[in-house]
Image (tube, rainbow, N blue to C red; front, side, top):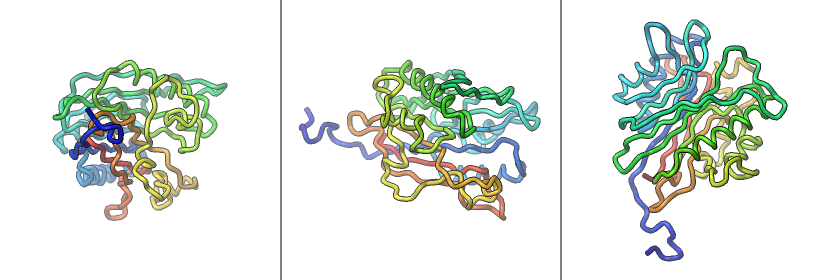
Length: 281
């Protein structure tokens, strides 16, 4: 029995590395960006990679090509069609997929309506056959306009219901994605317990903050010319979120950093930077 001052018992030292990155679909010089994306993901060497705005057309699939090049398994769900290709969410994994599901998120809430015609917002759920027990991952991409906070809050409510529906689990749930909201927004505060949570017991650590990072961790950054062109201020809208640690400390956030912030011959991989976190596992 663990001592009262050591409620998690002996902490495991092994780690899981999880990354998330919005790949910006087929915008900009998308063919030139492809090799930069691959090399960036190779350098990160994550066990699990969550992707948003990953594209697929009639002949090619970006998630499938990345999974093949990285030696990973993959699940992909297209969300909407733009620039001659489908754009959607994917989860790539070093380990086999035990099961997966896709849930559509609402497109209205709090008096706001997502009016982007033809778009869907999704959460892709996968349960992975990890070497030290199953790992559940939820990859999502919330509505994007600044004045759609009400929509995002309703999407967060459904996301939390989906997370609750997959209990029990021996490793905390991991939620990754482009949430299109800054850390002090109501929708992120709903996920991190700084305002009323939508589903009792479903609450997450923000890996960036939990790792003790002192800088802003902007994932939309003027250091990236693709992002700078939009004349938006630097902001952190991409997240790795992890449920509270369990016995032996599994799920504890040990480190987090941004990646994709270095160009290759003047080309960045995306208009977003990615986030990678290391967790006890």
